[in-house]
Length: 203
Length: 389
Image (cartoon, rainbow over all chains, first blue to last red; front, top):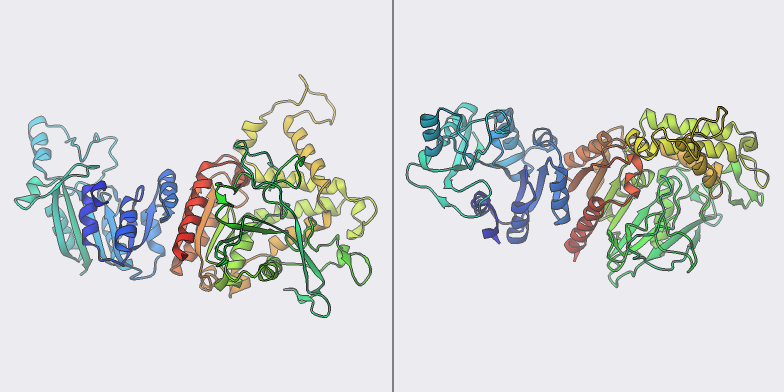
């Protein structure tokens, strides 16, 4: 059930129309796709780099390709999908603008989630300790982190204007990276939310 | 592919099986081959395991590679020393579960394991065909398999599956008879041979043709070109392994001796292994069949056979759901070739899953015990089976 899934994926799942066609970039062990297939009759495809995770997905009966998301998106014809999902991955992408454009070429809508770098804990750590922040959402040191992009909710809105895409819907949430529990943050989200989720479309 | 046939350590087996034969294309209704030649009558050897359900919706067709045969799993008798070539994958509750699926495998046209090939009797001369056997293609092999499937009264196959040259037949099935194929699993395969693959095949063929016993293919019933065929097999074996697997399996270890013999005996374990594989192969395989099948695999080019040279256009005919699998150390059919077919499938909006399995055993990895491969095949088959119910 939905409650067994990472909290940000629960929100994303609630945004997806039943029966739609979905591409999940960096689908991991396929939790979201499996939920969507079983509960929303979604026709889903996943892309995942790690062999062991790909095997787990296919064993579950999902359709998943092993590969690099930046390369794999290039092969699909325009508007192949109703939704293309990029959850907790944007902060690791080398060319975010290019990927977002590909995502909106092959999908009618994109759903993007990422850790919010302007959360008060991050700000507080940097201010008081002088070290690069290490949090539950961003648990690495500067020299071993795969998270090469630091993004805030406000940055992403500015990014949408710079790159030229629409934000249809957004949710700021408070949760940890693998947590099943969390809450929507309504009040000063840029300071209080640990993650942002955005539904985007062509500009 | 190599001979790794061994008893399944779990002891689970499909049991005693029987080779069957189906004959068709009796003159004047010979089979029309891609080359324009006509061939008939044709016999195809095949085996089946499991039970075809009343809706005939659980049939899985397995397609074998160069030196394989219809004997995929099980034993011919109680005292049969070894099971079929993919016994670890096919059987009750295995990757291809014979409790759920009706499994079929045909010996390919041109082979020598029960189906019509160059060592079969030519009805016009009452002698073996030899070099008069017409060149057959991967497409012709598939056409002959289709006759068997029709004979079994099956109109749609739940899955077609095979590795290497068997994978080529999988792809050919999907494009030649798209309405009949619900899902397809090409393993360690390609849409066409690279120059490297053709080169190794050609060296292997030259080894046979250089054997004086070959006699332009007219050696029946006299002495056979065993030395040439053994060398051909040795070359094949090298291409089925990898640097890594050979290093682990043999290294530079010596065979039953402490020092070099300083002559041309087999000193190294790898030499001894290759000689043994070569000797064993000639006991069961016909040199002309080796020539015909390797040539058919070299000629195979999905893009040219099914369109004007574009793999993407070729796959526009396909309707199957695909699971494509490659292996990291396979240098005969490297991963880039599998990725190229996956790309073409994606561009056509086909449902495709792809996994590159980390394995050190080279091209042969698809025949060896591998939990990941079992899991992939099992999960994929269950899914496509559920989807049609």
